[in-house]
Image 1 (cartoon, helix red, strand yellow):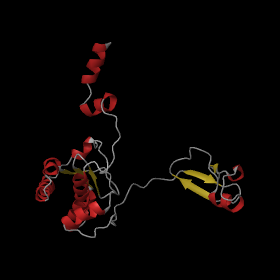
Image 2 (cartoon, rainbow, N blue to C red):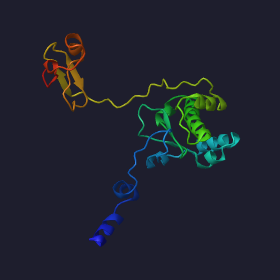
Image 3 (cartoon, rainbow, N blue to C red):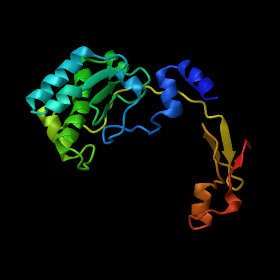
Image 4 (cartoon, rainbow, N blue to C red):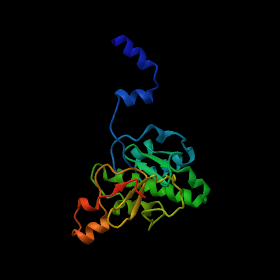
Length: 208
C-alpha cells in the first residue's frame, strides 16, 4: 500500500502534491507572514525587481533588497496590485499596461511602500495604510498617495440567477449565489418589527 502511494505521488507535479499533503495554510496580503501562492512568481518583471532592490538598498534595507520580486499576475481582476510580506513579493495586474507608464510605476511604488513599512517595523502590528506606509510612500516620491486606486479595471460579470421575493411588499432581490440561511426583507422588518427578523417577511426563492 505504501509503495502504491509513493508511485501515485510521483505522478503529480509539486503544486498538486503540496495541496494534498504539504502546507495547507491560507494566504493573505502584505500584513501577513504566511507564504503567498506560487503563481505570485509567474511573469517575473526583472526591470521592476531590480528597481525595488536598488531602492531598498538606498533605504538601508538590505534584507528586503535580497528578497523582493515583482511579477505580473493575469488572474487579478479589479485589484491593481498587492504585496506579500515578509516574503517581499509584489503582484501587479497586467491590465495596468493599458494605462500610462506613470500609472504603472505609481502602483508599483504603492505596493512596495507596504513592504518597506513592514520591513522597518518587523513583527510589530501596524495599519496597512497607516503612518508607516505613508512615510514609505514619501520616501518613494509619492507623498499623499491615495489608499485606493480609481482605475477602471473591469471585473468578471456574474449573472444573478437566484431571485427572492418578499411575501409582504413583493420586492424582488436578485443574487449571484443563493442564501444559505433564512433571510427576511430588511425594509419590512425595520418598518413592522423594529428591525428584528420575523418569519412573516421571510424571502421566498424563485417567486417572480
